[in-house]
Length: 320
Image (cartoon, rainbow, N blue to C red; front, side, top):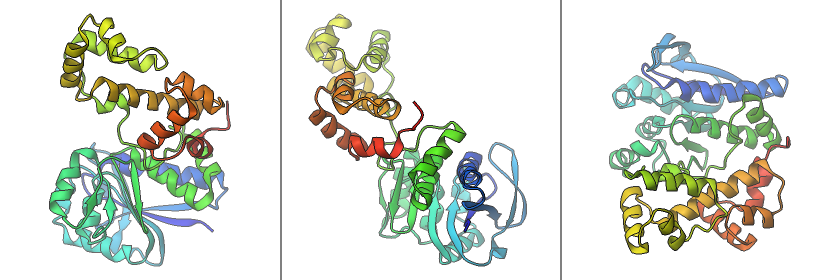
């Protein structure tokens, strides 16, 4: 039986927040030969609804959505602060949520869920830029700005924009199994389904871009050579600094100590190796610079919140 997905939009919504999940669900339905999902788009008023980028979609009226709903998904967008004042929108979300098996949001669509009273005493995420504001506005929401998406009961929230694709793939995996989610990801040529606990930031994204050209080049060297000697003495020599001066300047200009940056970069390398190779864990640990399977397991759990074996089982493509 096809599952019913209702995606809520409004003037000024982020098009990718709607289009990304919609394509995931529709592709799953295609692969499952009509036994996957039926996607509907709805807004306060039926008709053309313009996204922030000027493109428009045709939506039905929220008030005319009848019957049960498998997943109610609320998009985000730059206009969300204004939409919080639209009582018709907020009340419609609240009413439809009562009839939905699952409720979800993309990006700052979480604000609309919170305004509708759906996130009270729940753990939730949103775009990292909006996390502090969500925490200030809704003190009863446990805001975690780090994960790509969070499941708390029947409510799912995701981080910024394209993390809505990760959330939708997770829902497909939950409904139909990881194999279909992998097939959808391959069909859409997107990054293979990532676990929700994975951070919104890779090691380079977490760090600020150094003002110093030698340090910028050093960041590239670290990311490209995880198995090299990346100790503080070795890195300091590469940029011609004393160890103490290098540690101080690197931390000041990137926001991360050399050791923390190196560990995060190696965790990224290990994740990529697990996803695109069939190497045993001993090889992954060695080539990512983490040394031993024990270190790989410990670092992987700390950064990605799943074990290396579980990550590979769930997210590696069968195509080599």
